[in-house]
Image (cartoon, rainbow, N blue to C red):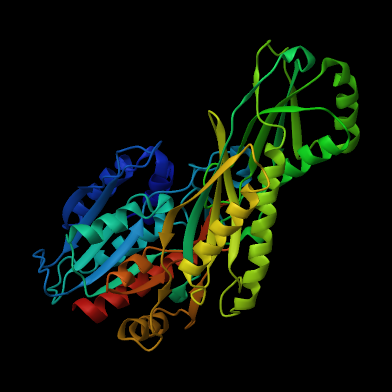
Length: 489
């Protein structure tokens, strides 16, 4: 028998941040499935992403007929990703004592990274399967924990391409407040690189280093209005400094740790003449909110130091302004059946490289917005911006595209899920989702797919103090139980 709370605490304690790999949690879950009598496979997921661990695995459990016929679809696939985003600023995890990997139970809530998005959903599915391990099944049950969902849905894409499973129906776990999700937005990630020749100057005039750290509030990238973007705050602060007539020379700009989050930190390093140092300290005390902006004062710069071009800040602001205008243009395609009922753009990350910077944008498009037309418009705007800066070279790359989901509300799978809601004591609710999920990958490959899960997404996923609700978890177990009964007995 699974001790749900004990296992929830264990899963949350295992660091499975996408970039760091998920081998430990995959092996642990494999052990749980083996103990329950499931046939298991560890499927290594290969990828070519830079800065991402190669130790990525899909963990597959099968109850019932394990023989896969590539020509005949059969059985029910219960899919849950077992990676998480980075926890961000740990001190913001006030409900867990500053430790996002420490499951903390308070009344009806379980706090911790991955509690809602989406480790505990895997336990709900495993708990539901427990009742069927001695039953004779007409159709197999597949339980899969996927890798790398937060960095491009690596595991789901790899599993589909491998043809290792061929289910008739797929239920993807994501926090939905127990609603059945049959449609969601498309997800696009763009990288805008700005290349330049660094300016080698005599640093004697600019010999005092200033490093500003700006703070915001993280939330899921599909709900940017619920966060406070630290990159935008940082750009505003630097603009304010320049408008106060301080002569500055930029050397570094960074912000955000994952493109699909609203960034909660951003930093900029620059140099000023020592003659204006006292005036700058006074300006900082009198004009900047020291709760949201911290400053570090460094030593002297060395002769021959390389600076960014003077107009690099202008170019970043111009790109951001163009995207703000593009987002406003997209309001013509509003759909209030989604929340938010519009396409959104999140400035998720900015990084430095030798001779350039990289800006990363998280785009959520309504199904009515044609991705190719949007792509052409996006690239045209960046190209137009580049013409204003003769010393800079801008390059736009679409790094990621995940399609939208659009299952028919009267399909057999959706109708069965609504019946399962009622049987499990859940309010019958059919909904749409702003976030992108693995269900769209299965749907695009021809599988009937829906999204369902315990917990709240909006304002909770990718946010400090992420939590799930104990009563939601219990009801989710009953929902999955009913779906297994419907399709596998």
